[in-house]
Length: 241
Ligand code: SF4
Image (cartoon, rainbow, N blue to C red; front, side, top):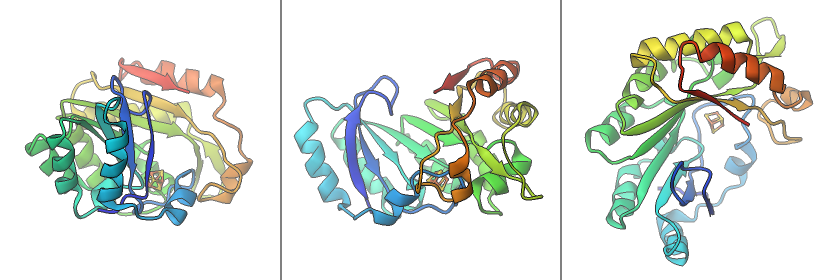
């Protein structure tokens, strides 16, 4: 299990928990808006021993662990790592891009994860553009169904600029995000799914596609308009700024 860093524990990354963060390097997507690319490129491997050494120093405060990345389900020893966390009585949250439903199915069947946060890369017809890779559409759709079976979960979409087929780059539109919300409701069944529309934050020399660095943060008005419309299909939607 490669762990690039033990990020500072906090109250933000895992709702309701004080959580340490295990950052796993490596991702099978190339989202143009990805912030993690520099971290992924420069991360050293502290390994599970390094992470548990860190946990020892914060064990009096921490009651959960977030496993993020990158894409944690690519890690071959993810399950033994989670079992070790479980043995310490820690709650586990997994952040995933949904590309690996086989691993999600195992985690769900064995009740290994308490909370899953899955990125939904906008409307299905834009997934290849917003994920920066093709061929994961069926897996992502299957993962949406699986994630809705975890004890606690959220779906989330960063309202980022997307490189369209004609080369135009523009933020997700309200209509596109209505399509995304309808798809989640249809694939996951029902409408009671927690869904966050998140602000895109540009970072100089820090995004996979440098062209996106010229864009501003997602305009608040666009976020509000998207939230208002997607709430008609997923009433448990919120803006995450
Ligand atoms: S934003 Fe995209 S490329 Fe970056 S870690 Fe997440 S899934 Fe991978």
